[in-house]
Length: 236
Image 1: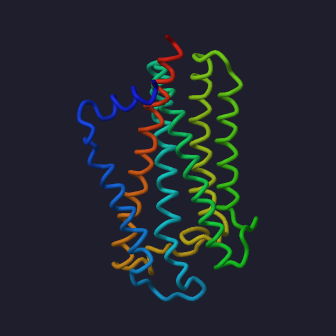
Image 2 (image 1 turned 60 degrees about the vertical axis):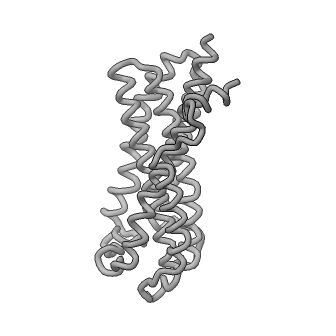
């Protein structure tokens, strides 16, 4: 069975063996989920207690961007080595990144409702950029599903993946800084870290970033192992 093969590859003969970073991911996320609600935070106008969302919304986006970067690295590796395994990993990383984009978008909409009075505003270039970036990656998966030949699919998808990552970076990181934006750190607005991210918040924020990135790696590890096993089984 596929799951039995995955189990043996992952744990080997010792069923209690688990990688240290998976334990760290669980500990860090539990720590940030709990202490993020209890730690003292600056009392800022408009934000008030919603500033605690910084411990969840931003680290989840870090995990998403990390996975998209991971995906494009293996896309480039596939183009250089013509390695189908790299294409599989690239695809699974992109799927994982898109998975994290959804809670990132949800927590952002909730934050916007409490601070800006609306779930979404088309006046903010970063929100629009996020929506466009998600659509670009959805097109990536549609492109993959439309090509039957796996070698052709892998090469075309790898090229598109590079394009998608560059466009995501432009829409999320560059354009909001060049135009008026409601987001902190964009459009002339000061970032949290400049005035408000005090030492108490840093004790939660930095572990949260590490924890969510490690969790994204854990999810990717499971997905890529299953995808590789499925690919080998289909070749038999």
